[in-house]
Image (cartoon, rainbow, N blue to C red):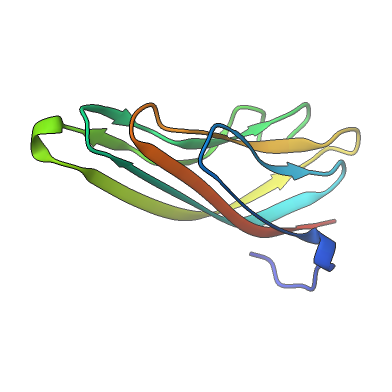
Amino acid sequence: MFPGQPNSSEIICNSVTATGTLVTIPAGKWFTGELSLTGATSVAGNCFPTVTTSGTGVAPASGTVVGRLHLTGVALLGPVSSSNTTEVIVLSPIGNSVTLEFTAGAVGTSSATINGYIFG
């Protein structure tokens, strides 16, 4: 993350377990933070939770995957789980706010947690 001193209202933390908005970035602002994804499954199938950008004029472009976790469950082998953490940076254009969207894995459980700040 960038060094600096954001206002208390610019510090953003959130965690979700269901598909939906993780963070809204106001128009004309940047967001940077640490994104963590977790997932677990004990049945056959794929658990691929993702976080993508969404909105007109967002950078990186709308639909860009900024975080993904890959888990493949095989029922006979027992449960599998994993997590990862990465830094993200997103720019919202002057004309509108944009979001980071979480899509839960198809099987099992998954979550996204983000801690960062808005600046600019």
